Length: 159
Image (tube, rainbow, N blue to C red; front, side, top):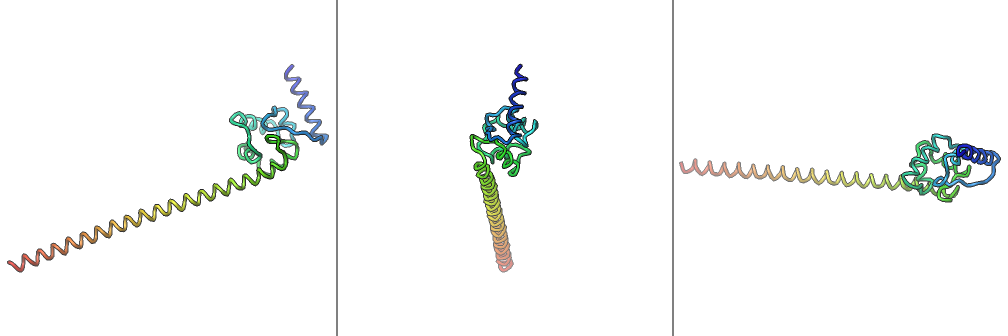
């Protein structure tokens, strides 16, 4: 009986979607049948959404596209236009999510550049310390050789 009810619900949503009726399906609350009623979401994507949703609710469309393989920025816009929402936010949130994803990528690149600069500075400091130690060792060896030569000269002069 449950299967029949869900099939009936899916059929109603499919008819509504096909007729162009405006309705909103929240990705964090929708059943598999409701998700599949959105044009562009098939059984595989619906299963991925449900599996990821068990790990935690989607925050925005950027989070949705980051966590679900097969949903990119263009696809998320199409899904939002088809009635999918994230926490009750539709198309406007999709644009913000796209911007958020870009901002996140920029921040990640900036952090990577900072880390690279830190590593480069650290390596330069190590190289400088090694060179300084090497120079000090050379100076010490030269001084020791000079002292030995003086001692030898004194010994020869006495002898």
